[in-house]
Image 1 (cartoon, one colour):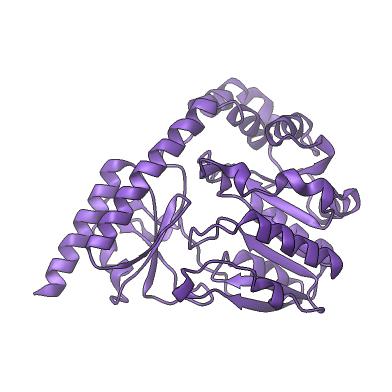
Image 2: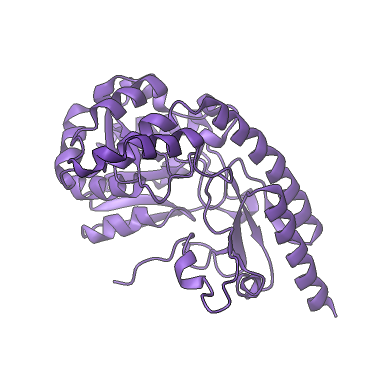
Length: 357
């Protein structure tokens, strides 16, 4: 089986011969980079890395519990959110699974690896790819697992909390597990307005996914976690993964990251300001731009080769041709630092001017 291509593949695109700088707009990582407190924790604890990591992440789980305001026994940590997605598929072996389209491809990849089938709930471009109550009609009696990304990747669209909770109730009635991927929720100014992590006690069939990957720019360190109130389900997830699934350095970095409150405040202000700039400038260029609540923007162009043409400028953009429901006309770009965003817009202006000749 050919692996699905994701953003962030700087390794196959880097021009070693010309030593050209590559600006990666394909990966939705915090543009501020790794927090200083995390860097400091790595250096100060480097002597511990010769020891096996804590297999149950005690200190990290305690810190996450305080951060999320949930009991510590609601938490399982993993080698990134993707690791937990595969654990869920391996533990549940769900058979038929419902996913929205477009959305993060690893949901369906993980289910198919376990022999399961995928049912797509296609989101309408005419409705700006919003997830509405019509998803409830897609929940047929044969569905045993549902993945919902909120905010959605690659659209950046939010699903109302009431809709997610109604879906959770329908899933519970159908003996179905609902996984709500909230990995980009922390970029919102008001995440509690949309997150369902405060409702887990009422829904044992719900798993909330979170990650340090995006908000703390820890993609290379690999750290994610899941929240769930069902002890039996969490136990199944634990035994479905490898032992020592979270490295010592990842655990130490996670503990340090959760103290970076000023960093998070700076991030939200920066992303909000720079996202608005990109939305306006992409719209001026004549692209169909979809408003986003996250740190990335989806837009549509008639130039199917645009992402390839941007490579000539050292810009790596995310072609959405391998998302179910999208094709090469759709491009996703991350919100980055001001100078990088301006460079992207300048390159796009140059390309569009050349096309207009």
